[in-house]
Length: 341
Image (cartoon, rainbow, N blue to C red):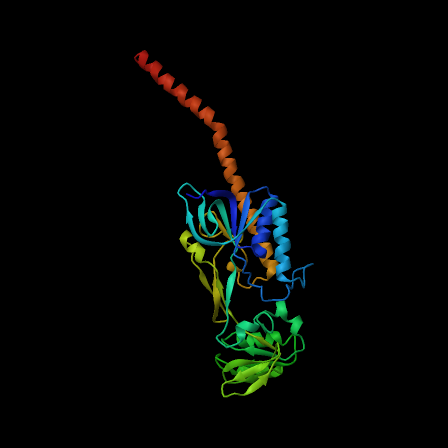
């Protein structure tokens, strides 16, 4: 049988939320292990943006620096995938790691993030994170004043077009598979100088290694240098099903944008002993927000462990007195019997 390694806290997922949580716990002198499979969501992107003092840093460098900080305080990092999780009758959790054996944890912090499920258009996935984008606050500055297309797939597409107009005067809304805008929406688009093109987009036009436009059904090609899409944000939560946790759909503007794990403000889930942070619980968090959520959840976990340790310490302190009281009570009963009382 494989030896079970024990940690006070295991963090499942080693992105900004997971590493920030692990750093906080390691500095709190907790034994903490981060298990990460090495597939960060933002890997296709060239840089991280909106993270104060780290703006423009490549995602891999941010993670590398974060890992070094965690291990510098005694935290451990394991490359692997958690393929099974169960709650133990005695408390705590047992995790099965693909290629890494069995881990036992007193508490769990789940920061597995989400998967961006892109619209089914040939070529989108290959350019995702480069010229195919979704977040204006992450990438708007980098494509400012360029020809920006919006690939409409739902009711939120008009909102997307109006938002991206902040970064460029050349914005085109390709209706693709979305419903046609209403009269008020057409008025808003016209007022902001946003062109509307009907017809389904069936592919991308690329010259060398740069996006140059989109191809409509029928073969017509229209220019754009960046294409905005609306992925479905699906929480990576398969490992949590064994712990009784399920995802909840999130709706925005009459459109389901994805699924997430419900938590309270501290990150605590409905399963005692399990916290979650980052995009697995908040679909629109940027890197800096995910990192903050990891810190907040870690502080809550440390407080929970401290409370448990205090209860056990009080019980241990009172145990001799309880035993003596029981012994004295038993002796009194025996004495009463000897005297016929």
